[in-house]
Image (cartoon, rainbow, N blue to C red; front, side, top):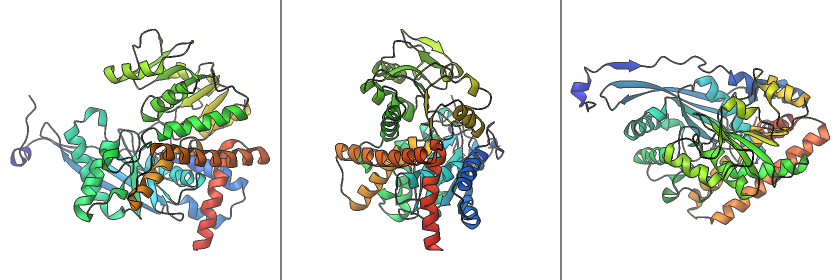
Length: 434
Ligand code: GLU
């Protein structure tokens, strides 16, 4: 039985300090987003000074969070909050718990949030946070202590008009409830300090499925634009977390044929299409999509190489790289994850005529409903689920039309068009402020 340590006893327990991770992952995300920025900035001939301002994060917080673990030992976690750019409004972006998170990845994700909020025209800047930890191996008690400790350490940089966190990979509504509670101890009841909260505690109806709903809306539009019949279209989805599973559920409801899904353990594939509600049930009861009856097993690499109409990477970054891009056979790719495709792979897909809808447009539904949640909290007035969905759809469609038109008129890939759209808005606000 693990010893439950009291403070004096625990002093003698072993102390673990995790080494500060140096670019833990095999992909340099910061380089990816910087390269994407430079391609677009060059294309639109953005002035050097504006480029310098937009390429530089405003503020980076690195904090250490000690947590007494269940077995009595003290663990030191490393956490980050990067406030990338706030010219268009308060900093906004999720908090990620993952064992490979480091400052460079958080910085790159914070930059993406800046462009994402601009594309859907939300009055927000961009930020991101992260803690290097493996939430799948931590108890509820440990996660709560970590979240409260992290909140205390970044408290001075947060605020409903300063910086508003949200969930990301490895965090959820429960994590947000702890952040709100911890922040409230010092500042009083402040639901607008965080979005993606449980609906009971001031969260918005429709926030949980918002990213998947946005991905679905954009996929329907992209299918129309690239002459794919959405009804009956074969779709493969990599990742079955919040974004992947909701995308699968909503697309299945609308008549697309989800032929394959996967998670960290592995994947399943059925040419005739998977019964998604049953896959969700199976995943809830076993913890993975694997072993679903009536489907064949497929690994993540196999899924990415399936001959499908639509491929949706909805897991972590760096899924499609120079290593596996030649195996991709999809007709259309929708980036539901952040940075799933490296610039080199992106170029290869473009050369082969495979359209890619970029992350900053495709997955902007989450932060869009976060904006609605923030607005509801500030007004202390709740919207119906229907109103949330309608407003989300209107914003996603507007953003899609503007990016797609720009791409057709300029003869550029959607990613460049999306970046130009975003940089234009942030640059304009910068010029007006300086
Ligand atoms: N983490 C999500 C994203 O990457 C949502 C951010 C938010 O709602 O602030 O877009």
